[in-house]
Image 1 (cartoon, rainbow, N blue to C red):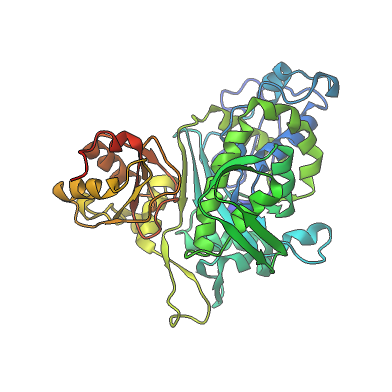
Image 2: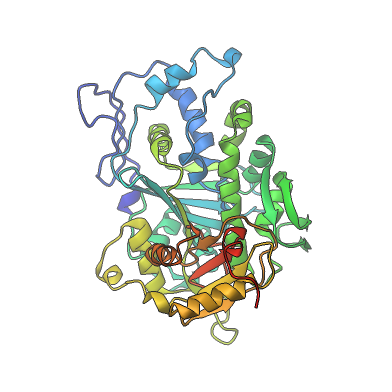
Length: 461
């Protein structure tokens, strides 16, 4: 697969205007604008490995680090001679000049595995990350592990999480590329599940809202899940429980939604100044859990790009599709929706082809919109539904109230149709767009009604 060429070239070129940029050739070539101090590149590379792979397993991804600004200090004063000014001056003169697509996989535990064998299991988590410095954005596509695929150059139809077992990271990348209209994949990162617990514990936990009580034993992964409902700070074990919980109506798709919630929570945690002193301890502990064909210089370039990307343009979406019917296949699959896929590839990944040109957004008033009350006032969702019907929307429905009260209304872009969400926001005159697939699964857009709209609505009739 040509896009995953491992040819790399690090060469100083202080006179070139384009020095330090990611070339548009199939292999990623990184050049430095100025000579890097001896020994500093190794320390920068170690730091980049930790940041660039922070939380990739259990659906936290590469983007958790690529979208945060560089902390004010990475190492205590007594841990090394290079202050942060030196790192900024020498280490982050690596830049990317084109969008880069990276496949991130969290690999299930392999019983009795040793050394490199820990990366030979099924990909419990699969994320396609696009870092686009020109559009000033990071996009993340969650690919459900049960997605039905046909392996390249084969008649084998299987689940996408099986590709890594059959042919390693390269076959997994080829399979994803084929499934997504031939989208180029530049690099891959595989992370063992065991990394997740250690990372979260080292960061002092992550704060998330648990929407329901979660309690059962996952015998396949030897994991006891026992979480109470409500806001709480989860340690590494509890965060893994939250990510792996399956005993709800949505199964693995519900896991994808919780994984996206954890991704945002981890990103917020990494931005917390109190976490900075803990980062050096992560350097050595995380490396044994990581397999990647990114070079140290490429990691530095990507982390550098992430520092300059605005925090607001951080977009998550799940591969649109549906559950297979019990009598449809011998196995249970997530059946990809080709039209939804093409829309996501167009709006999030900039992929234009004959297939994507026909992936236009549906007529706004025909959007399937779920309305969910998250305000402190009961029955307010029905009032909003009546207002939408008066505005001509014909495909709206109510869904179960959200368990946590919210002050601000959200327009959750469940299936990645950002353009329709922006039009709906303009028509309503309120609500903030949440580019993530964490709303009602059957909807195209979920409106999670907060107190801001409830306070302006008419009293109950």
